[in-house]
Image (cartoon, rainbow, N blue to C red; front, side, top):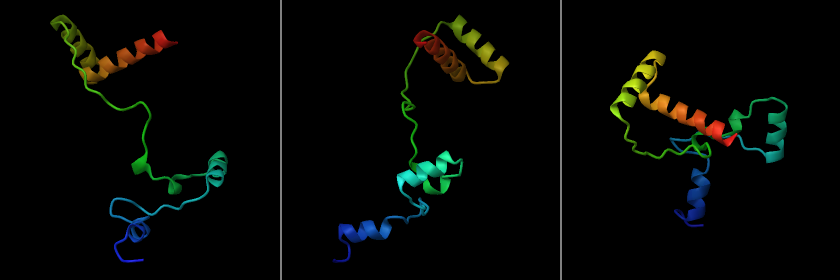
Length: 100
């Protein structure tokens, strides 16, 4: 095959690259068995490609009255967290209750 063809490029770069590390690949059944036995499977997983489902972020704008902002800031300061964190926590708690 000629140098520079897709197959050569794929074969030569398959497990190499400055941003990736070489992984020790194995069959899914063997990987499952190793995991079920409580052994580490990290050498077989490329964590740089890992994704958490339904965790993508989307920015939304919400207008709050000043009294609410002051109250949020006071509570956030008391807890030592950012205003945004307290809003997300409270909304998540409320949604969990509503969906339970």
